[in-house]
Image (cartoon, rainbow, N blue to C red; front, side, top):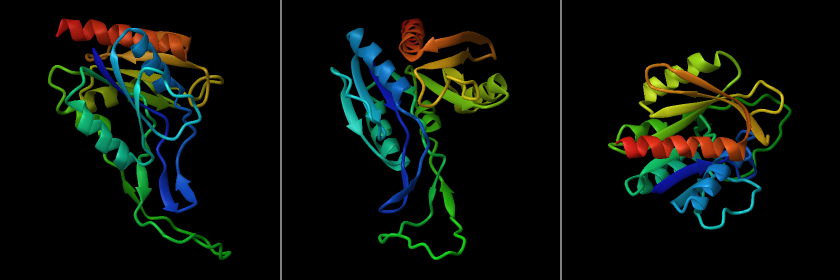
Length: 212
């Protein structure tokens, strides 16, 4: 098996010192990469900026922006058997970048933002026999939003995380996860350490791959 996995946040810079981002630690994607390596799979990890040690045995590609992550994912996608898109990619980026630090003036500041490309949807649209897995971090209507995302992006399955629960979601060691499948079936996996969740995800990836 050849696995491509993404992890961590992206950073969308306003100027050389300020950026838009989110609190993703990268632990979920790194756990998936570690599980993949332990299975003997060829593993490529495309990682946003995190404070985690490298996954020994994985090829790690470091990126910052959503556009760079898109470039690396699409460039490597053809060579993989499965993509697990665990990164928390910024939905928007500043329309313009200031090469100099934006000075504080005491007045308000309005930011013009452009949408970032949907990396997951682009990959899934060309998946063929590849397995493509997404994540949905939600604060409400967890399963409904996950079903909508799964259908719109044509994924093999999606892992929905309830980030409103204490101890679950960004920066935590565990997640409350619900797996949602084509046709709408949802399987509540409960609270799991991210290493155990990674195992369940890759067990399912392998099962689906062998079924194709």
